[in-house]
Length: 93
Image 1: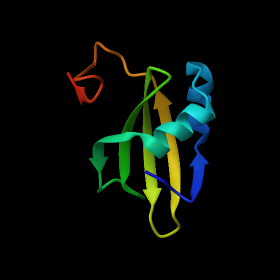
Image 2: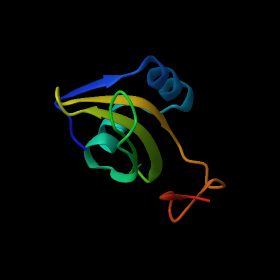
Image 3: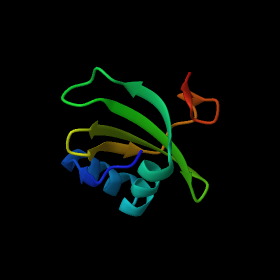
């Protein structure tokens, strides 16, 4: 997913800091990641769970997108727990 403007929520920034996930890594997931879940009915904008492997590390990013302004919102980012995910972190157990 690409967005002209990318906005990080306060929650996302806090969690990225705690989880040692860099903005560069999140930017990479948003630009090149695979959409593994879609929530088109989420409000105020549709949201997506993205997955990418950055330097071999799996990263999930919850991303919301406002098509009218071409703005993406990073809601949170985390390293998926292998005990909760299967199929190479693409589906929940």
